Each structure stands twice: as structure tokens, then as C-alpha cells.
Amino acid sequence: MIDFNSIDAIIAGFDKILSLSSIGGPPPIPTPLILVGIPLRTGLSPTKIASRIIARKGEAGLPVGVLPSGTISPDEIMERIRIEEIINALQQEAIITVAIPPGITLTAAGISPSGPVSVFGSTIIYSKGYGVIQ
Amino acid sequence: MSLVDDKRKVFTTIGSYTSFMQQNKLPNVTDIYTSINNKKDIISYLLDVLKTVAGTEALKELIGKMLTKLVDQSESKIKMALKKQFVQFNADNLLSSNFINNGINTKVEDIDIKGKLRISPTSDSGNLIYNKTVDSFDKIAHDAIVNSGTDVSFAGMNMSIKYVESIDTFNIKPLANVKIGDYFTNYIDKTQIINKDEFITNIMDTIYGVFSKKNNKTAGQVLNDLEVQKLLEQVINNNDSFLILPEDYDELQKKANELANGVTYYDMGCGLMEAILPFSGLTKLIGIVSGSTDPFTIGNAVEATIAESTTGSPTTAKKNKETIRDGFFQKLINVFTIQMLQFSIMSPQIRVLLGIMSSLQNNGLVLIANAKEDMKKFAIMIKCMANEIIKMIAEFIFNLVVSYLIKLLTPVIKKMLKEKINQYINIIKSLTPISKLINST
Image (cartoon, rainbow over all chains, first blue to last red):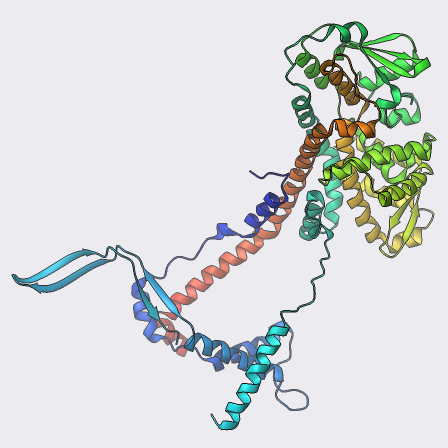
């Protein structure tokens, strides 16, 4: 219910509609597929990304290729530099933290003074891991 | 990396940081929408949002809808709000014997700010401002003036009115004794707060002065009305000082002179253009509005007054059509808001009701006099009614904006959903060995 005497409430009403929150997020990727698929990926290539962007300049109505003078377009050089810097930063400076919730099912085997033991259960605390972008 | 590159890197890095810091001093952004800088004005903000979503053409549709659906819906809401103001602690008491026997006395000019009650309902002007299909306070009050010295009864509102010509005063008494709360409730229920024809006439008169000129109002009479409207506009904009600044007063005086002469000026951004709406243009508009419930027909009829008022300079009007039209609609909606508040609290019937209430609360002392001065006495009530009116109009415009937003956002949402589905499919494909084989062939 919006208080129509309050400009803040009216703005909040528009914000709610414009946030398009009803769209929701994507479904999760199946974990086994990630485990199988990730090793197949080639990793990020600034050259490939910059090339694809330059190739699509035509979609924005911009000319692609060398300038009429025969020199390389500074805009295209800048595109490569921009992507290189972004990818470098992602690969060398980004911090990836993975939060693992409790409740992960586990099966473990070990040895006790009375002999080998097997454990079935689930984790009871959250944990975290790190990663890099390649 | 060579020593030369290392040295160069120091300079370029410093240069980049310097550039970055200088970018913080960006020039001020110019807002094309004035409502952004006006913190309190809700209606202007909503109109700007509407124009952004649906273009200025939507203002015409809004006008049409406001003059049909909103006006029709507003009657019951305003009555409910009025009852909250008038039915008070003494609601269960009977009307006082003083009121029963002597009534209240009020000067005509103190309740009739616009000078309506002296206009005959059968005249050309009266045709526009009196509702002849029902008995109304205004019609009875006019009858009382015509039949000076005679009690004119209005059983529906439990009152009799006598006009005393020598002192230009009404004497108003109840016909039967009832509880105060019942008296006020019945009075409000039997009152028509907004007569649509009169409402539109007053809006167009505030813009064009067409009714004022027809009825030979003086600049002073028009100024008095404009001052009341200015004070109400200030209340709507959260200024309850009930004072008009000298610079605003000068502007009102200028405007009063123009309206008394039936002239207005359209703002074209780079200059002003004179416009005169003939009385026949007003009667034609009222004729269309009275017989129609179609917002688009009414919106077009209102827009047509622009062309009708600029027949003296058609070339200039044609060249600046869009600018004139946008300013006109914006102004019209602003006047609509003020008029709705004025009808709710400053019409003769409500002024009388204020007089009766003040008399019952103050042992027969009637506290209404000059309308402008009275506004301070009834400040809380005026602010409460202003809030109700703003709430009603803001909700109406908001709902129209939302209907346009839904039309705008539906394809956007579909596109975003498609995008998300495609992204998901592409991620799945990129993780599947088969897709690698397909892509590589």
C-alpha cells in the first residue's frame, strides 16, 4: 500500500516496479556438469574477446578495419588495450571466495584403535574456499 | 620490461591517477525535469514520470480521464473527508437553541468568493455553473437573493435561507432540531461538492478569464479569487504560511488584469503569445464534456480550445503547437488540483457549513469573515483536505503511469527472460564435451 502523500513512498513504488525483481535468477548449473565441463574450457583470451568486439562494431554502425589513410584505427587498438587490462585484472587481482554451506553429505573412512571405521553424515559448519580466474 | 619502459610506466601511471582525480570534478548535471529539484511537489513529479513513459500525448489522455473518472470518483471521497472534519466531539448534542431560533448571519461576500450567487441560473453564464437537475444550496441561495426578505426553505439540507438586502447578509436556520453530527452528515450527503460543468468552467476561467470577462468582473474581484487560489496552491506544496510573497503578489495582479480582460498568454519558451477564448468556445466545450464519458473525446475538446483561442495568430500557434500544448496541459492539471481543493473547502455551501460549525462551538459566534483571513483559522482542516485531494489525484496519476509502465516493461521482461534462458543454455553447452566437438567442426 503506497502513501500517496509521501514522495518517498511514490518513488519506492516506481523503484519496485522498475527493479523487475519478479524475473528472478537463473536455475543452478548441475554440479557434475561443472566438474566434467570446466577442464574442457580454454580460458579467457583478451585477443579473442577484443577481436569479437571489433568484429561486431558494424552492428553499431561503426566502420571496421584500417582507416582510409591505411593506418590502424586507434579505436580498435584501444579496444584491445581495454580488454587486456580488464582480463589481466581479473586473472591477477580478482579474489574469488566460495562459501560452502553446512549440510554437505559426506562419507569418510579411517582407522581407530579398535580398527577401520566408516563415517556417514553431513558437515555441520559452513566453510570457504578460494579460486582464480583463468 | 626494459628500464625505459619502467620509467615510462611511472609517468603514465601518475598521469592516469591525475586524470582520474580530475574526473571527480564533473560539471553539474542539468535536469531537464524541474520536478527533480522541487522536493515536495508530488503531482509535478508524477506528470514528469508520465511524460517520460508515455510522451506528452499522455497528458491529454490524463486530462480526459481526470475530467471523467476522477471527478466522478472524487465526490464520495471528498464527502467522507469532509465528514471527518465536521463531525466532532459535540456530534451527539442537539443543535443549539440559538441556532434554531436565530440562525447564523453571514455576509454574502464572505461565503461567495467567486460571486456566483448573484448570477441567474437561467442566464448564459448560469447555465454553465448551476446544476439544474437537483436542488442545490447555490440555487436556493440565489432564490433567496431574488426574493429578498423571504425565508426560502431547502428541506433536503434541513435549512431555510433569508437574504437581508440592506446589510447584504444571509440568515440561515435549520428547519428541524436534530443531533449536530446528524445535521452535518445530512448536510454533506445532500450537497453536490463538484458540479462538473461548473468545475470545468472555473478551470478554464482561471486559464483564459473567459467567464470573468463575460460577467464583467473587475480586476479586483479576479485578484481576490487568484489570491485564494495562490494560498491553496501553497498549502498543496506544503507551505502553510498563508502569506503571499510581494513578488508573487505582483504576478497575481498582472494576471488578474489579464483575466479580467479575458486574455491569457501561452509560454512558448522563448516568448509569450496572446490567446483569447471566446465565451462560445467555453459553452461548446461544456456541451461536449457534459454529454460524454469518453476521456479521449474530452481530452480532444480541451485541446481544441488552444486552437480556438489563437485564431488571431494562427501561424505562430502552429509553429509552437507542441510547446504551447505541453505547457497548457501541465498548467491545466495544476489548476485542476487547486480547483478541487477550492470546491471542497471554499464553495459557498462549505463556507456556510464552517460558519455553522464555528457558531455551534463558540456559543453562537460565527467565525467566518474574509475568506483569505479565515484560512489561518481553519488551517488544520485545509491542510487535511489538501492531503486528501493530493492523495486522490496522485493515486490516479500513479495508476495511469503504472498502466503505461506495464505496456513498456512487458516486452523488456520477455527479452530479459529470453536472454537469461539463452545464457543458461550457452553455459550448459560450454560445459558439454559434445558441444566442443560441434563447435570445432
